[in-house]
Every structure is written in C-alpha cells, then in structure tokens.
Length: 484
Image 1 (spheres, rainbow, N blue to C red):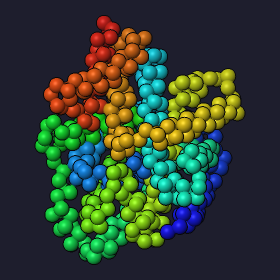
Image 2 (image 1 turned 45 degrees about the vertical axis):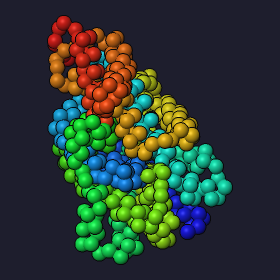
Image 3 (image 1 turned 90 degrees about the horizontal axis):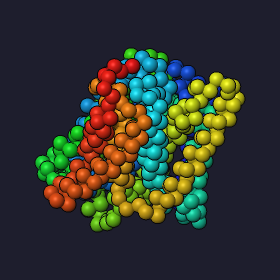
Image 4 (image 1 turned 90 degrees about the vertical axis):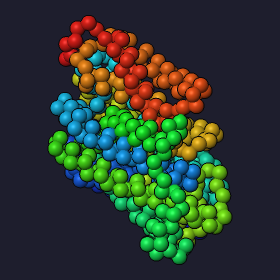
C-alpha cells in the first residue's frame, strides 16, 4: 500500500469532517462555542462520546496491551460503568441545578477564589498532558506509515494535525464537536469490526473457531488476584471508578458535551446509554487484541512497542482495504479527543482564568477575539508537547495517560467530594498548597510502598491522591460548618 494512497484517504476524510463543520458553525456565537446553545440531542451526544472517550489511545494501546496483560484491563472498564452511575446521579444534577458553563465555577461558589483557580489550573494541566499524549500516538502512526515515506519530518506531521484541529473547531466549538464526534465514532467502530473479520479471514477461522481459540489462548484472563500486581482486580476496578469520575465527571471536556443537552433528564439518558455501550465496545477492543496477539505469534512477528501491533498488522499484512479502513478508524478515534480537548481548554481558560463571563465591559466581538487568542495558544502548546513526547516516549501510551491522570486529577477529586460530602468551609488561600502537596505526597507514598513492600497502587493511585487532598482540606477547614 503506497503512502500516497493513505494520504489521499486522510485528506478525503478530513474534507468530509470540514463539510460537517461548515454546516454546524454557521451563525455561531460564543454561546454556540461554549454550550452548543444547549440544544444538543442526547442520543447524538451519547453516541459521539464513545469516540471521545476511547480516542486513538484505546484504538491502538488497548489491543496492543493484550499481548502482555491479557484482559486485565476489563475490571477497569467495569469500574468505569460504576463511575458513570455516580456522575449521572450525583454530579450532573448539581451542574444542571447551578446552570454551569464551566464546572469549576462550583468550586468558587462552594469554597472561594483560590480553590476555584486551583481546580481550573489542575484541569488545564491534566487535559493538556492527557490530550497531547493521545494526539502524539496518532501523529506517530500517521508519520510512520504515511508522511515519513513522503520525506516529511515529524514536527511537520504534528503541525499538520494541529492545524486541522484548529480549523474545524475555531468557530462552532462544542456544537460542531457533538456532530463530528457522532460521525467519527461510526467510522472508528466500523474499522475495529472490519479488522476482526479480516484477521479471522486471514487465519482461516469462522466465528465459533475464533472464540474457542481465543478462550484456549489464555489471553482472556481478566481477574488478577496478585495483590502486589498493578493489574490486581480490585486495584483495577477501584482505579476505573475514580478515573471515570475524575476524567469524565470532573473534566470540562466531557461534561461540556453533557451540559449542551436540553435538560438534566436528557443528559442522564445520554450518560446511562453511553456507559452501557462503552463496556461492549471496550470488550470488542480486547477481543481484537487477543486475535492480533495470536496472529502475531503465528506469523513470527516481534514488537518492542505494543502500540504498533494493530497499525502494522492492519496496514502491512491484511491487504489494502484493511489498511485504508484502519487509517480512517484511527483518524476517527483521534479527532474527537483532540477537538474536544482544545475546545474545553479554551472554554476553561476563557471562563475560569480570564473571567470572561464576569467581564461585562467586553462586547461579543472582544470576547471572540480573546477566545481566538487562547484557542491558538493552546494549539501551539499542543504542538510543542507532541514534539517533546517524540523524544522521550518509553511506555504504552494508555498506561502513561492513566498514570498522569492519577497525579493531576487527584486534587480535583478531593476538592469536589469534600464539597459534596461535607458542609465545611475551608481556608481558601491554603488550597493551592494542598493541591500541589497532595500529588507530591502521593508519589512519595507510592515509591516507598514499592521499595519496602513491593506493592504498587497502580491506577488506584488516583483514589489515594484524592483522599490526601480530602484530608488536607479537612485539616484546613474552618470552625463553622455552614456551607453556602
């Protein structure tokens, strides 16, 4: 398969996305950008969120990881399901009741200025690092299999991807993203299903044989009872619950889409529908991973980087159609993550840091100009981080994403749940210190446990981080317990 053919498919698909963008961004204003005018159909949001939640990381890292970790990711997925129930029944009613555009304004009303700014800052840090790690993985594949063959350096590949994201989110914002996510989720799922069929055809299996051989292979092991292992069942499940609550329920990007629904009831229907489908889709990715691992073993292929198993097999071993469908699926998985991150970061910075909603002296034109500047600034930061990751990447990206989240989302988890579970006020000026010290203590505790007890917290580290933040807030609570 020639790089020029792959490049043609990439360009054609991107033009399709821009067609949707043009339709959805007509007559857009700041309210359109930030909330979609609160008119998004819940079923469109639910379906599109599948692509946004999975991203290019799930598309490649989850299947690739099966070779080394079997189905040990599945308990984390079940934890996600429990986390979504918490979000739909606890957090979303709060957000709709307060009519929030940025969910972090809750922290200002509950605790004060410094807690609010600390929460927003940690979201910006978390989402910037997580989104750019996901984008880096996709840019790496596009560069390796297409642009590098055409003599284009990596930094140019990153620039092309970032520019495309800028162009189709610049005006329509969340309204555009809701509809493009739906389209992209469809193509991503079609790519996975087709590749399952293609591998089975290549191996000469029917579906009964496939399921029987996968079961016999040992790759379907999903309960790790070793308490010291980072993939221990309980650690994975608890990690999944709190990763979900933090990375969805306390994340401006994911909640911005939910808050664009017409009302709370529609948003909850969206969340429950989406969470059920997501479990099935993740199982499909794990099944694909097992099939790919068996294929690689039989063909005598060797990979030091498991993230490259799926793209290499699809593009180089399954024929032209599979390669083209994989590229479309990869782009479809990448765009929802990148566009949502850029829009939510712009929203959070405009409202939480620049205070746009409170600037009554700014007219619509001035607000739009500030939004453009912030939008472009984050895009530039994305590009710089993608180039940086290219020089240091040494782990399966999905592990790296969740590890980063464990440290950066912990303070948000502590802030919100202290507000929800207690009636105490806190010494607001102390909260930036609490937010910084909690991840540092969390890291030290994890290192000490590994060194002395050969015990790591794994993804449950996020829960420990949130608890440390909660304890810090408790120690800094005010004597009165009258919460606003």
